[in-house]
Length: 418
Image 1 (tube, rainbow, N blue to C red):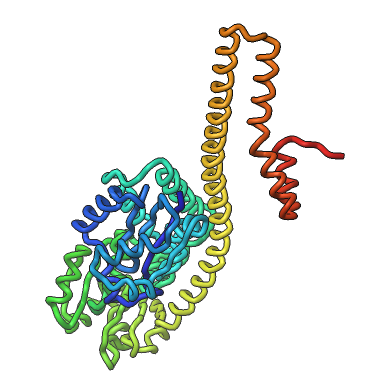
Image 2: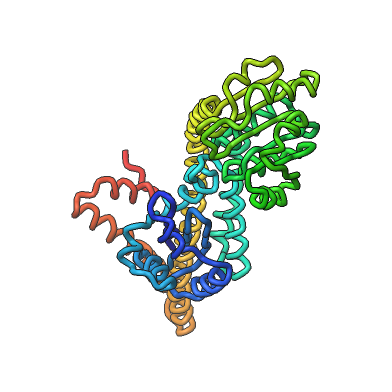
């Protein structure tokens, strides 16, 4: 049995090709049924996300093309094209790769936690379709344990590595909990959408979305239970906000120093946090000169992100040490299964020889043959039969000058030479 991993991801292929290789829920069910019923595959798990599709299999026979041929055939793709955009790992490398992926070390965003949940779902899908046996059950449980250990013992997921996440983390750092804060989001594009999702998880008292297009703002507001206002309402509503996060495509500032001065007066100079993640800027830099107004630009956040990426890369090195150790543990377990099989086969062979010779000896005794001669013949034949294979192995190793194999044979046979 050989464990293999065949995959395609954001590093090896375009979005167009990744889309063609991805498995829909309906295709996933059919694919797992095909794999579990295929003569060449013992066990299989399929991981399919927006950034990667990976198939983990245990092969009955070692053949690197078998899985690639099946994948190309299933999706009706050119096998040559697929081959040049995929990666293939075997044995220990495949096991190590699975653990790296589960820990977020192979993700677009280093250390992101979502992939672990996606792999757990892939494992459950495979189990539902009876595509998993004892080996893969043990492998994936081990992998989940490793991912938990990496999260616990390293800082792989502790630091913000996106501007949107960094903006929310900065607000949390300044205010502590956000449950008593009112947050104003200006814009409704992709960045503000990510900010809104991170904010929503921290349960602020109120979120308000201000945007030039009300309908677009409403679409975002529904997802995070927010209020909606037009950009023109900013001067009269700005004082309600404790935190203002802005990211629009405007070529001119949306919030000036004068508007903020008026808002602070209405708030009786209760502090306000402004986070401007737009380029060009949405908030005039002079706002930062006001007492009780704290302004951070996208450059400030990028500096935080860069520092945090470096911290994650250091944590990734620590994580790899853990992964390598746990990979080795699993490989040792696999080898122990092989040794159990060898021992069983060897014992069966010895038992067959014994049974054959004892049966013959009993027949000779019943026929009246001298007991001493029967016992001597039994002992000689048993000795010769058991010595035959190791004797041939020693002769072949000596003839080929294989000193290391000779040494191993002596150790195996318990031969002690002074």
